[in-house]
Image (cartoon, rainbow, N blue to C red; front, side, top):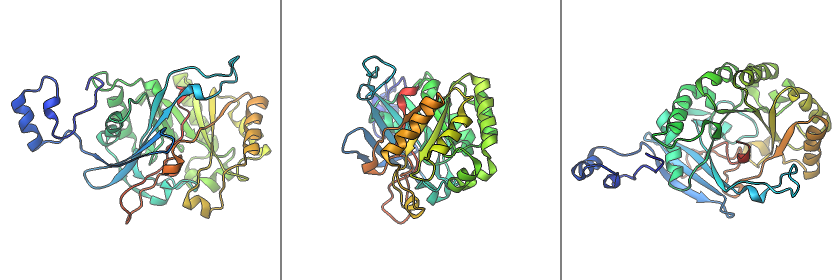
Length: 347
């Protein structure tokens, strides 16, 4: 690829060095990609584009492109409070069609698991996105639990970092998991240089089970042990994701408990205000009050010394924000789950 997008079907003749006679024959027998974009929508602010990607079997997933200008943010550590850096784009991609983890705040969980994507189908989401925007960062935060499709995710990452293809830096790739403990430990060897994000959402097992029912198989103390093993093996910072549910997991006592839980880690805690979803509304969830969220963040930062960010929202108006992706059967095949928020400047 040499960093350039693959040709669309019918454009084989544009491939450098390809004989013209071969270019004329190839479209009759081959297609450049096994998937296609069937729908694209961009947010009113222009910072988010959602792609609905259809596989050869008709199954669909969503991938979300998020454009970020660090100069629009603030950095309290700087004298002028201004962030540095150039504009860049992050791709939030899917690893499965649907998800079996059933997080109660997330729309994707309502689908159940429809199937795994193969390595090519995951990689091709990047190919499609590169035709829209040059992608710098990758986050596996779309539909599905990446570590439940482990081999395909590993293989797709190898394609992404291959210098003959897009040559992305492993440090610009982040794999997010609800917490498949044995796979977290093996990531250090199988995904060298790649970042880990753990979707925690609660400071203790009892509260976490009420939000993430499948967490019964992965108790909080075992998740912490797995993250500790990964950090010791890689020397890298751990990212912890925490969807903030108003008056559910955002009180002062929970902030103190969370700070105590994470104090031994070199980590970044990303607070994610809940985005409206049908399933979440049925659970009675709501976004946190701004002052309550600010107090929660301040407690973690000042009392516990944990680098804590509040994620900027991307694409809520096109249902592409975190937890809003879902492909609904029976509808004009369109939207999917899980990504649409990220703190892209941390990598």
